[in-house]
Image 1 (cartoon, helix red, strand yellow):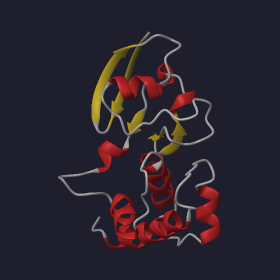
Image 2 (cartoon, one colour):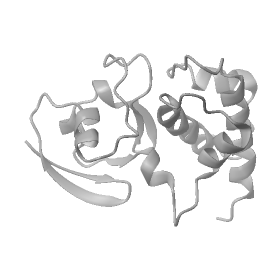
Image 3 (cartoon, helix red, strand yellow):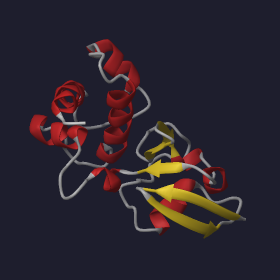
Length: 158
């Protein structure tokens, strides 16, 4: 099946097998921030934004991406500058092994953008991150990174 979509701001056209997951398609394109973890939509390692909604790509068929706008962690760097969320993760040290980080960054990005102008509470952040698993950090630094990202996002010129 033929699909057209936008990935990180660039238009693409693909001939896809109807059984191919979006995770597999993105990884075939060299977008290796999209990690293969559980393959059943439980861990969040494969999370990207599809039309600005955090989505597990391991359970999202590539053919469903027709007409959609997809954002991966690679696409969040603009003119060599990290996004507010990426910079917050660095500033706070919310990265250990790094396997879960791209998915967490995209889920965090979705929250920061969706709730722009509203300071999320720790509980709201933890609930928002519930679909992403991390074996290393215990989530405290990740929550702090989202709080910092909100602050950095507010300071960015629009």
